[in-house]
Length: 562
Image (tube, rainbow, N blue to C red):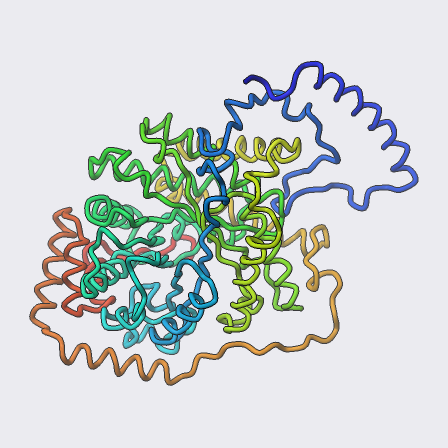
């Protein structure tokens, strides 16, 4: 195998293109282009036509290859989706643990194949429901979890050895994972048989999402503790989901999402190797990623293909991983929340379908499809069923799973994939030169890059250079309200009662000993996970454990806010 096209083919392409360009020059006199400049939603300029000339330097074996083979541009699995579809994993969480458990069972009955948990804001920040910081927020943007008692309700009648669960949790990720491990133990399921993912990605929090607890260095240390513990005792668990999703939601371009996410991944791998002394092949196969699938169809497909190729080279050449599984970039995809509009919300069904299709054609392993009402509230049961059916229709009816990477070889697709990879490598090199991602965050580099990109995009919307249907074009004067899910105030009252009862009946002395042991582990550098698991088994609360972290490591304040 050699270059993608013969020299003769490229020469003929050049001749035909020149002739075509002469014809276009005449045609545009009569019918000018609708826009002076055409670009992706991330503002990468797109040419009118792509030909073999645009990818004449590509080598098929080196740059594209076969599915399941290095550099995995065409996917990790040699049979694509023919062996099995991606995991249908709808993000869900609301109100109490019992409410979310009921939604999980409904989704499993409707054909969902993996679980995913959204937590309320106090839980995300490491606070209990009875904290003054939590008033009025219980169950509003996800499920409230204070103790193992809540967690056992959450997973009631869920077969933890058969269904994988993803938990979107970051500062307190070690605590929620400890609850999952403790729940499995109480159900008689060995840790070696449970599978799932904790997001556990603090670097993207400092860059974009801004749910903080401790400063960057100790935050990464706790993450490395979870990676080490998972490698030794929970081998089917993905102890980190390195996330570009929230970077994109904050307003980044697709290239920035790609580059910053993969550079975060490099930072975590370096820390685990340097801090824990683990061989890269012992933990790299369990690293996972999480990407946004935005509305620009081809840009998103190319981003995902480029991500696999970049990561394969990083793992093989930078970290010298020997196991091909370490070279794989495995990722979950969620359709873009920031593309949804409160105006004409039923348009969101169409947006989500297109974005989901891009995720599938990009080769995702797992997919969440947003519901039409998520821009307004937590999704209703009706809207989440439509979102799940969107995935099922793509899988079962459209034929896109019939063949692997069906857009490969397109002059446009391969050229845009190459362009995005090239631009991402420039960012990675720039961050390397700064001393790594933590150093770049301290300088405010990725934060400012994202802020500038978000500002440019908003200017394009304001000036009608980019269109959002129903927002700045095809606007209707009267909007029909849609029914949305409401969280009853009694959820908070009941949660407070549950928490008070747990505190009343637990062995407070055992909890004090557990928290003291955890504090000592934080100070000495010992792995925190065994101490977290013991503490939650003795009914220590989420906040009590997180307060130990805050006391030992300090609290982080975003320098951009002060």
